Length: 81
Image 1 (tube, rainbow, N blue to C red):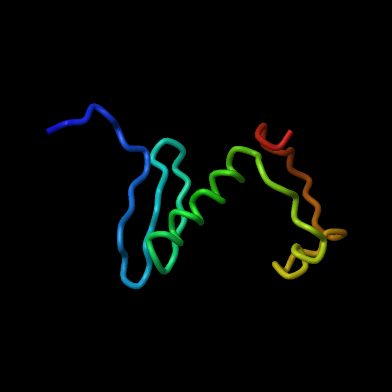
Image 2: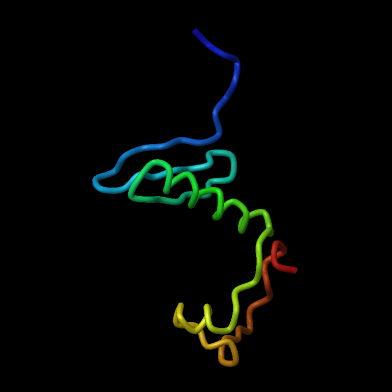
């Protein structure tokens, strides 16, 4: 029986992780539970769509990025301009 609705999210269990993928955008995230995977996917999709807050300097440093030394000579992709 078909509902006529095409899902855009797939959810699969891969070992100890649940993987959630938005098939429309290709954005993928994971979590230890299905709920965690879906919550993480929501957050990743917000980032994909340009929502959310910029990371703080401290958050960047915790991720191993030194803001003052993070430069590139390459042009930014259109999505970041």
